[in-house]
Length: 313
Image 1 (cartoon, rainbow, N blue to C red):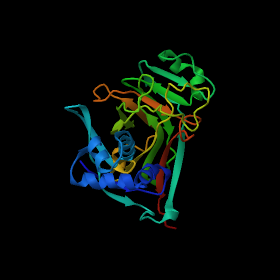
Image 2 (image 1 turned 180 degrees about the vertical axis):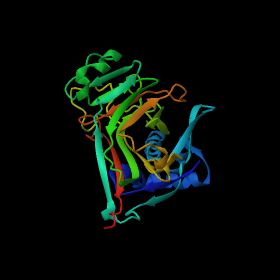
Image 3 (image 1 turned 90 degrees about the vertical axis):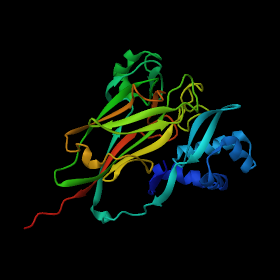
Image 4 (image 1 turned 120 degrees about the vertical axis):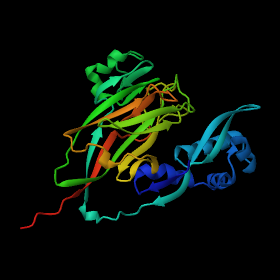
């Protein structure tokens, strides 16, 4: 089903802007308005090779502008493409007076989880070395895991983080945003290895997003040189936003869960990132923090709020 995309002027919207900054990808979107097409058909229509077309299709899919299904065909599995977005809106400013909008931002380093349940393949590493050894969940309780800058587990499982709630009783939350660099976890790496990653806050399931793959075709911009080229290199920068209208991933609405459905008045918030037992694609998860991947940033939760009206004298 096609959705309405809502973008803003933050870096989280860059994947969409970058995907649209190409005459070829704009032509692909126009072609798909008429009918679904497979990669080979799109390549022929644009006079490109199937390999180059696959790259363009992946870029559009990662930006939430295109979706595809793998269906069996006469010559093997085909990737049938169709539009994922019906319209796009860019917000340059919000309706509320900017002076009244403030925010609390909380960084969540990858290794600062409070609970987990995982199975091999799995592991952690700092920017200098692997913590313990690969595929041994016991090392997830190693004290040095606090310094981890990358974390991964295969198949199903979860990691859970605690975050303080700095909202005062007079402050009204307007939106909550989670920003993170994330990917699937495949044996070695595989750019086409989907995984259904579920985001839960304070016990409320926000949405499930499908990671396209586990990226290892090139080094991450900030991934240390000592890191093996045959393991996870970088992920996708994703922004999950919960507002009064629902839950959005990079502007694409994924669920009807609204800000008022989450208990934001708790003293602390509990964020769980999981691949569920009943997931269609149980492809694990890789989290990239500061010092790994393409963005050199920790995960972050940010709540935008409005101060209450001052009391009457």
